[in-house]
Amino acid sequence: MGAVRTKRMPRAVREQQMLDAAVRTFGQRGYMAASMDEIAELAGVSKPLVYLYLNSKEDLFTACIRREAAALTEAVRAGVRRELPADRQLWEGLGAFFAHTARNPDGWSVLHLQARTHGEPFAGEVAAMRAEIVAFVTQLILAAAREAHRDPDLPEGEVAGLAEALVGAAESLADWANVTPGVTARQAAATLMNFAWSGLGNLMAGRPWTAPEAAH
Amino acid sequence: MGAVRTKRMPRAVREQQMLDAAVRTFGQRGYMAASMDEIAELAGVSKPLVYLYLNSKEDLFTACIRREAAALTEAVRAGVRRELPADRQLWEGLGAFFAHTARNPDGWSVLHLQARTHGEPFAGEVAAMRAEIVAFVTQLILAAAREAHRDPDLPEGEVAGLAEALVGAAESLADWANVTPGVTARQAAATLMNFAWSGLGNLMAGRPWTAPEAAH
Image (cartoon, rainbow over all chains, first blue to last red; front, side, top):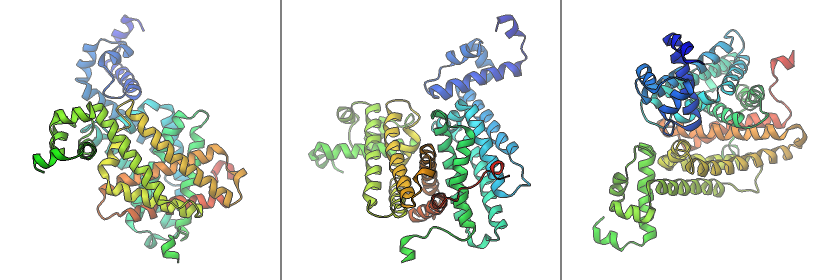
């Protein structure tokens, strides 16, 4: 941690240290309350150096969102073997998602809580990542429908809604798992799989829940 | 809208007009970007009057959160007949939830997006409301388990996780329904019921999804 060693670091390495410190500070304090002084101190560098490398608090926050969004989607993508049946792909994807958010609670807080409420360009960055994950889940649901030979019975709008529901459930469970002692990433994935797949599985098998007005 | 008529209004009525204007402004612009000038103008009153009645931007925002949280929980509570079976209660509760969030998109944005990211006391206000809704859903799931005589097979942590998943799915679907043309409150409720209840129903019937490692 000495100044001499720090000074010899290549720019890319030091930039990552700044981003590590920034993600931690933004994630724990929130975007508005986080100070550049605190981030520089945590990164072990001077504040002017942070500005030299990352330009402004806004740009630093954007860089954090981009790095954390890329890491999360990459973790989910790498966790899924696309040749497996749809339910196995979802299980692996959820496992990778909860493992990553559990290992990176501050990054998750930046993406899910901070980035969405401070206007553009932050909200747009994270909306693009979320759209990518929703698209991935939508493809899984469509693949499951094909496997069950039930495409025509599941209208496009319904599939989109199911994907939104599943992603929202995963977001909520990740928040919960990160603050609830004793809940492992695997348990969170199993809970959501139980909730989601048994439900989707029924849908695919042509057993939807029936609204009372329609039934009587 | 004339000054004379406005001046004769009782304080309670005028305060509600200020809150209406504030919810709309906070919901559409975000807490930070919303200005007291804009809120006063939209409410048709002077800015000093807003300060006189609501004290500060912080207090005004807190009052908005409280009013919108109370209205949402009241709408859900009023929509549910507690004597019905658990799935019917959930159906009615979801119907009331999506109808309310569709009618009050700015209030929903204040609660779900704005209130959670600007620190205390705002986050605490909305966390209390969310905890109340999670508790309600938890009770429904436990009631469903009792109806299916399966209490012992559904551990407490699993029920808590299922309730978090369901509430997160509802939040995500409400966001989605509010920005997706042609999605009605009833459709959103039916999609979530399909997703959630068929899944929970399977769980209650002792048919959980089985993780591959456990199955082989």
